[in-house]
Amino acid sequence: MSNTPADLKYHSSHEWVRDEGNDLVTIGITDFAQNQLGDVVFVELPDIGTAVVAGESAAVVESVKAASDVNSPVSGTVVAVNESLESAPEQVNEDPYEDGWFFQVKLNDSGELKDLMDAESYQDQCAED
Image (cartoon, rainbow, N blue to C red; front, side):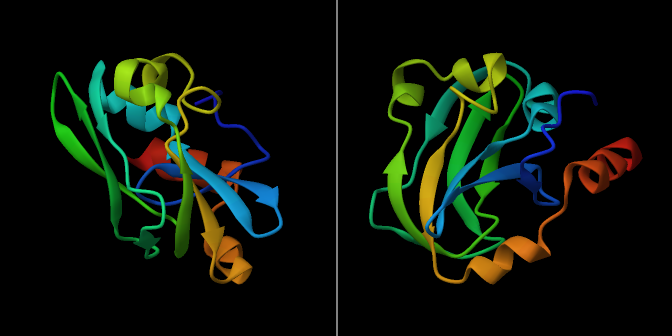
């Protein structure tokens, strides 16, 4: 589990959050999650303007193995989506922390970020999974 960037926060359902400042965060799935899924073949992104709730489904990722919900680790409003995933979903496998991001959220409460795991805690969870 060496590919767990220390500057991100993590949710127990294998999503990552990058704090972009000004109550804006970028969300994607972790390297662990994309490895478990296998080759990603389709991504369904939320609409811009959608209200998302922490811990609830906000997007869907489909692989050759299964379809899985992508939960939002935080509550807020979707302000951007990674439209390139619609034509190139393999970016989730190739670069889950940069080109493979899913959506950006304007936070309702930046305090929610404190409830997420740091990289070390997330690695510990993955070792148990």
